[in-house]
Length: 260
Length: 252
Ligand SMILES: Nc1ncnc2c1ncn2[C@@H]1O[C@H](COP(=O)(O)OP(=O)(O)O)[C@@H](O)[C@H]1O
Ligand SMILES: [Mg+2]
Image (tube, rainbow over all chains, first blue to last red):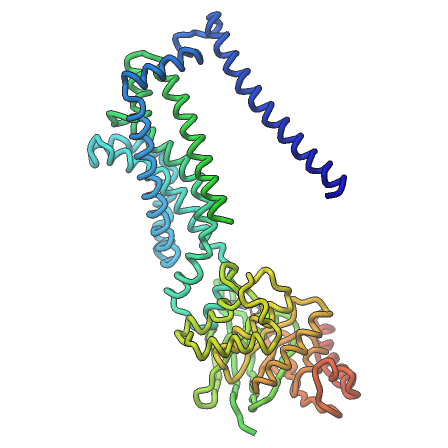
């Protein structure tokens, strides 16, 4: 290895160290500020809680309130809604792409549905699907489906027109084109839409839990609000942040593996 | 000579919301067995449209196309697009796969073509590892895989740089001749047309009509690169150049 190359690698490493150091500093600074501001009552400790109280509350939740169970409920619902969402988006996108006329017909309705704040449908969903997990999944689907369908459909539309023409020179049937071109070509788009999809799904699940549930992190947060235990609310939010971060990282990792 | 393809009074009009675009006007010509025929014409005059109609990818508006018996046409498109997720060999077998003719015999035939034309080392590679010239040859093999009687080529060399263009056109010519195919090629490169073909059909601006058909006579037929040195080369170049330049003047 040449000296220049070594210098180059060193420079990259130095930059990485700087970035990580500052990231840690910012997090630590934030936590310390939060703790101090709360301790000296510069912010209302009852409303904003504090890191030490959050840790204490989480311990308490873990011991007395089945915290793991709540986390698992939320994760379970997210996973189901996520897998269902991807599968349905894929199927619907194929139908819309294959039957362009259908797409034209329902376009205004899709636009309407898309611009509607989905949470407004919450009460209706509860009446139809019942106050149970089903409603939560439906809520999450309402939110992740549109994004999923649109990104996969756009992927289909961006397929190289020359390749479609090539298939036609071989007199390929529509099924051939679908199976041998459209679907394999959209693999990348689908994989890279997973990240956005998991965030959307989590939003939907928490929203659903706010509305109906008896368990899950969304329930914990709402319950905390109702009994005016804001330490519990804050702890719920902190756990949620950690979960969404971890899920995002897992999906990024899977994406990297699959696109290699 | 055996007439394979006969086109009579072919017309094509495209319709759009606003107007009609006349792309092809009254084109008549024949193709004979073993011939290499080139079509030259200004860009946008309707050359690709003509090939699309011949290969049933587009419909004609008027006229007749007679194909001798059950002859098969093989269409090699202007772009050498390949499915990036398939290995080179699987790309070359795509046509056979779609036509459900991917049997051992045909696979052997395709592998044989790769070997014959010096591409054996690339069978298992990804398409994006190939150079432009190699991709073009693989695209030709992909078309040949279905054993067509007449090859239809749309500007097969237009995406290559000048050097590889000469080389690849020599290779492609050799492949077509060795496989004993009849060929109809569109190009906008006069020199290429004159050096590679037995006949050159010159088209006018859109809507394209046949301006002239030249039978290319040489002292000695050789490879396209050798043919460029033939003493009649400049003569034909000049004639066709004038045919095409006339339209440029009129347009400007
Ligand atoms: N599907 C189509 N619909 C309408 N117009 C078309 C279509 N395809 C080609 N044209 C028009 O026909 C003319 C000839 O096109 P083309 O055959 O591609 O020309 P070229 O000689 O460059 O291959 C062009 O003016 C083009 O705009
Ligand atoms: Mg063209």
